[in-house]
Structures are given as C-alpha cells and as structure tokens.
Length: 294
Image 1: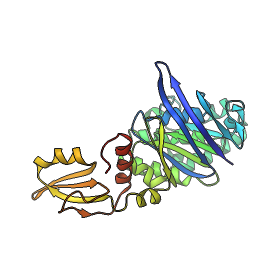
Image 2: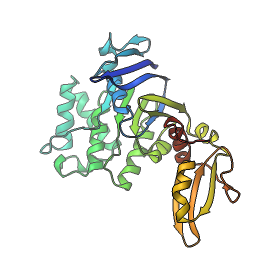
Image 3: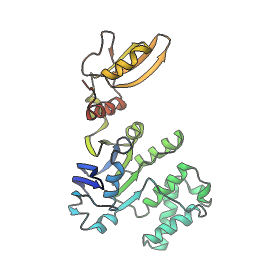
Image 4: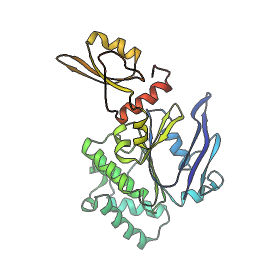
C-alpha cells in the first residue's frame, strides 16, 4: 500500500497556482496537512480524492497513475470534504443506508457495517434522531461513518474540526487517531494542536508549496536553541515583532512576557525555552514569508 505524490502543481485561471511542485509518499499512519487558510490543502486533497486533476505531476496508488485509473483509487477511498452536507430530515441509519446504496454496497452487508460504524463513532444511541438536530461534532462523526462504509485503505478528511467546540474537537482528534490501523489517513488543518495530537507526521504547506514533512518530534528538534523568553515593555513589543517572529505574548504586572524565535540570543535578558510545535510551525512560516528567522 503506497500513495505517492510526485511533483504536483495545480494552476487556476488568471495564472494562479494552488499547488507548486508538491511531492510526498505515504505507506501508513496519520498525516496532517498543516497550513494557513488558502495554503493549498483542500486543492491537494481534491486531487487525491480524484475530484480534480493536477496541471503538472502525477499521483500514484500502488504504482498506478490515478489520473489514468481513477477507479482503482476510488474503490479504496473514503473522503470527508470540508463542505460535507446531510439531509436534515433523515436519521443517521437512513442517511448511511442511502450513501451505501450510492456506493453500490450490498444491503445486508451495508446494514451490518452501519451498525458497526455507529458504535465506532459513538452515535449508536442517537441513530434514530433526525440529523438536523445533531451538533456540529455529531454531524462530522456521521461524515466519518459515511467515509468508512467501504472500509477504505485511504481515508481523506478536509478540515474536520472547523466550527467544533473544544470537547468535540478533542473527541474528533481521538477518533482520527484510532482509525489509522492498517490504512493511510490524511487530514488537513490550520490548527497546530489538531496536528500535534492526532498525526504521526506532519506536512507543512504554505502558498502551495511543501515546506517540511517530518514527525512532530523531528520538527521540535529543528527549533531547539531557537526559542527564547524575555520580558519587555509594551512600547517595545512592535519593534520586537519587526526584528523577530514572536510566537506568544502575555501581559503581566512586570511587563510583556514574549516567546521569540531566533537562532541567536535576541537580548541579554532572554532565556532559552523548550520549543513547542507552534514555535516550530511559526519558524517555518516566518522563513517562507521572508521575515527574519535569524
């Protein structure tokens, strides 16, 4: 089982590039596509889901070109788009039976699978309630269930936690992690904590380009000795931001406590700090934007 993305680029009208020369390979585990809104994450996922084709490059599944043989990918694919819609008057069982019929699944096998999935996504007790009365997180879990109906080898989920409250976000992240098993799971997010808690490795994407693809611990190692804490006055904050990327600020009675990213000590009073994934992510983006990463 191998998914390979080789030199993918996607051009839109007006000479706008959604992706530029994007490459990576996956064999198993959970991959988080991490990047700001508009970075190209959804474009890449739509290409992987065979909804659109790249302008340049190719995607292969077990060595087969997906553009030439899309059915090979679709047979093993589960996909939850960001704009997933439901029929509010149907309950979860009715909706999943409808999706199963669209996918051509056998009726008896589909009913058994639906029962299993409703248990997995913790919706069995709510299965007879109309979907229109579900919370945002419950609707997302129905979306995951429909994506898993065919027991896919490749599961693609686009911005799964957008609009969820903190409790639902944690529940959904745990669900994504639990679903890995013997499959490839790829999800996109602009929230660093989602990537940190659910992914075995992270691909940082910015302006359509892959900046870094590594395990979270490797990304943290790369910013060791580059994170500093210091206390400054409010009047110094603007100048500090111009000189260095600042990952956080906290106003306290003795001044503004800031975390600064720099390869060298940014001031005599700065002390080294343990890096977080948020620090590593900002450090990558600051270099990509041409801002001072020192």
